[in-house]
Length: 170
Image 1 (cartoon, rainbow, N blue to C red):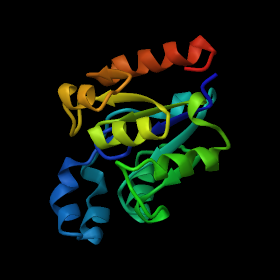
Image 2 (image 1 turned 180 degrees about the horizontal axis):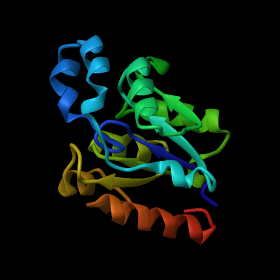
Image 3 (image 1 turned 90 degrees about the horizontal axis):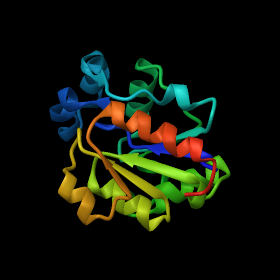
Image 4 (image 1 turned 45 degrees about the horizontal axis):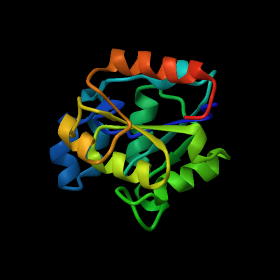
């Protein structure tokens, strides 16, 4: 039974391309004042009643919280840049998220747009879904051994519903 869905943040849940220049220059106040320019890609809120929601991001916590609050995304655990010594593509952020959610890799699904999301999730033993609407391509997710590769948010929603309805470990 799936007990946790663990999402990447930037360009998986929320399109943050409009903030990229500010992020690259570490101009966090400009990021914060331009959060309204971001767009929600996938809203995991309707899964809250079925499973826990984790967010694992290489972004700083204040930035992640501002984005999540602005888009009203509810989550049970947030692991951000400074929460672990090693970041994606290392598995440590996923392992910490699993620990905080009091679940294990066999009962979890990871969703991310970058092949580093896939590599980190697979290293943590988590079923990995690579999405191609962000920074990663189909071939990059395939090369990093994603369990499932999805090209649009509607297909992700359908796939997650099907996986959750299986009611068994992945």
